[in-house]
Image 1: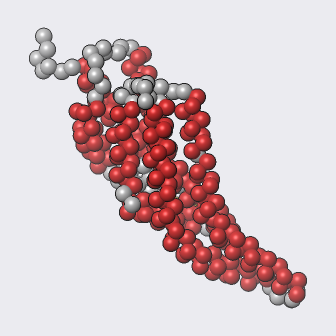
Image 2 (image 1 turned 30 degrees about the vertical axis):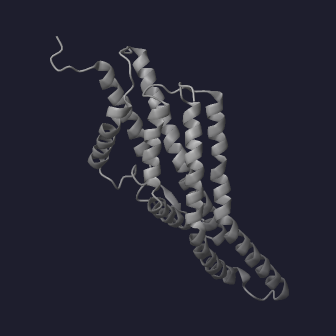
Image 3 (image 1 turned 90 degrees about the vertical axis):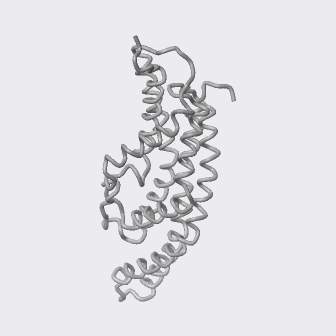
Length: 262
C-alpha cells in the first residue's frame, strides 16, 4: 500500500534534475570556488531544483531499473559538464590572454594564488579574470546561465541526453573562441611591447654602453599596464559578444543532444 502517494519516476526525475543543476553550478567560476560554504551551495542547488522540477520533470510511468538508472545519471553528468564547459571558455580565454600578457611584461615568475579556485596564476591573468567576472555579473551573465539550464530541460528531459558526432564536433568548433578571444585580449599589448623591444634593440646598437636590460623591465611594465587600461574599455564588448554567441551555440548544442525532433 502506498501511504504517501510517491511516484518513483517523479522522485527519480527530481534527483536527475538536481544532479544536472549541481554539476553546472559547481563548474561556475563565481560559485564553485572555495569561498562559498558548501551549505550555501547545497541550499542554492535545492532551491533551483525545486523551482525547475515541477514544470520540467519527464512524463511517463516507465521506471528504469538497474544499469539504466546509472546510465541516466552519467548522461546528466556529461550534460552538466558540457553546459559548464561552454561558459568556462570565456574565463579560460581571459586567463590565457592574461598569461600571455604577463609573460610579455616580464611577470612570468610573479604568480598569485586565486582564492576562488586555489590555483596559481600570473598577476595579470588573475587581474583580468576578476574584472571579467565582475563584467559577467554586471551584464547578467548568471541569468543567461540560469536560463540556459532551464532551456536544457525543454530540449533534453532528465536522463535523455543523446550523444552524437555532430554534438562533439560543434563543441570542439566552439572551443576555438577561447583562443581567438585570448589573442584579441593580448594582441594590443603584444604589439606595443614588440615595438618597445624593437626600440630597445636599436638603442643597444646605437649606444652599447647603456644598460638596456636594466632599463627594459620598467619600460615594458609601464607600457604594458598603460595598454592594459585600454583593454578594460573593450572588455565589456568582448563579454557581451561572447554571451550572444554562447546563447546561440548553447541552443544548437542542446538541439544536437536532444532525443526529440527540433
